[in-house]
Image 1 (cartoon, one colour):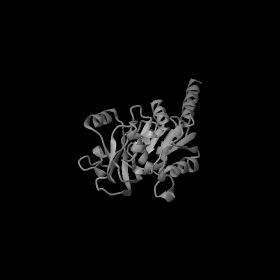
Image 2 (cartoon, helix red, strand yellow):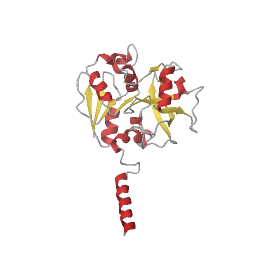
Image 3 (tube, rainbow, N blue to C red):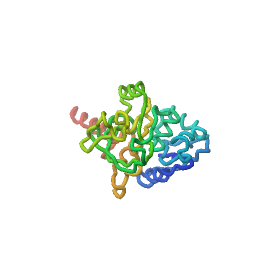
Image 4 (cartoon, rainbow, N blue to C red):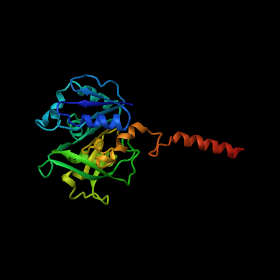
Length: 253
């Protein structure tokens, strides 16, 4: 698969995304400079972490003037796979590809830590290979990582099942009254209306090898590569169907 990683000035996480997809997942990853007007017809688009334009004004705000923005919005509208990671999540909210906003951390300090998240949606193209009962340990690195949205938006996210991940503790419990970092409803990641765009404040691309301290991000990034015909064990589900057909033939005999 071809993976386009969009690079803005200050997108320090672009190299991490390229490494994860090319060296670990074995896909064809390439970068697209923000001054370009096309994405190059990729199968996946990544808006990486970092500090686009130095986070001036507010994280992601200045990306609106970049020529590549039109292509990003069209790609999302065409129901094609896109992920915004960390600053990329902030950017997608600023571009109104995703609802809500990422506010300053409740501690008013930069957070660089691993936290636990639980899977809240396991049916989207980004989460369909995740166990709904699974806990993920993923790194986050941000100054503005506190998700906020108005009551109507939150109601829609909850009712439509578009919350992808929530902060939780080691037991998988989500504290809605006192969520981690003050993120409303414990939200750590969301999906758009058609569930092809995922925004998450954590960095799955920094959790794909044992030496990174966690491999829990691997399944998230791998999900699009696997598609809907392969399970996590790597078995082709179509083969199972063929086997069933053979069994039926044997029964007929």
